[in-house]
Length: 439
Ligand code: IMP
Image (cartoon, rainbow, N blue to C red):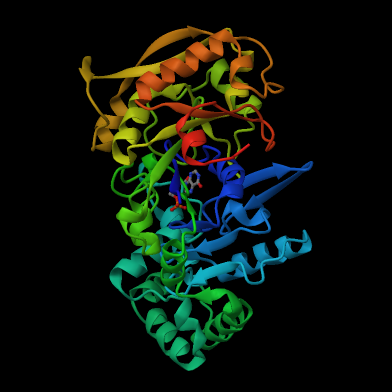
């Protein structure tokens, strides 16, 4: 059975949630392997739009099992709010939601630290994080004093651990900044109360996943953020603190590489980025960039911040394909480009006046890159009602064919609007061959 990763190939917000929502009817399980409430995916169907942060997009298919893996970081207050919201919408999670007992918990003081670090950083050093406590929680994990979901089962042990954190460097940093901190007793009491509400879902998810795969079950691995925000391969230090690339799923879920049968890359038909850091094809103070933002509703799901918009960066896309080795690409939001007479693709970079190969490791170089563009004729026609690959305009076919060349993989699916039905599967493509009976 297929076990396929769906991964963001740009700077996040590529529309992975919609692709997962669509594919998951052919999978038994959807599993998240990294990130936390910094993610925000929207899924629209039956005239309603749902915003999810922790819970994978497969939640709307009643027969799909949902896994939140050990590589994720969880804000228990926000997670419970999300589960309550789903319950109000009539989504039943009993017996089908599985939360790893090894996932790390975003303690309230780690969220405070995220805000403190961002507000006290000098202008050029601000990452522009989502302020959800992601970085400090992964730091605590790597420094080996973080708390995992399983630690919340025993209130006494929990209070002792939290007390040590409050009297350690993290607490010291907050105290030094004059921040008022909750007591260990209060944090332990609240945290244990939250654990009791979550207990029915908490389990060893690696064991469950491997058992299901052994039994012939199929798993869709849902990535959050995107390749260019990856801690190692992204535009460091303007990245998130987890491994967002397809390879990250193995450690983030306890599933061996030998069990993964494919990877799909999700790309927008153009580029966006939220937060600070290099974006070579960004359109700054530019009418085309503004039109992309307005047509694409390019404002963050988690923070509401306007996203930086630009043309499709083919060099960064090729780089993302090298790291993830996608079997196919899904191109989302193609309809956003319906209103353009001309569409550009960045096919090369120049650094200090000379051609530059690949994506540079150093941020100072990445910020000096100049994009080299080629221009394509737009289709200048509404595609939101198109449902079949062959009915796309000829200019859209030409644009997609060029994206295939620059990325280095086949385009297997295209999105022309936010609704489930506005997804066009390419006949005979890798997806149709590997995910049988999809549509
Ligand atoms: P953090 O993950 O909150 O630490 O933020 C680090 C960087 O990743 C910032 O530039 C954020 O804007 C960006 N980021 C984090 N999550 C997302 C996401 O889901 N979509 C897009 N950007 C994100």
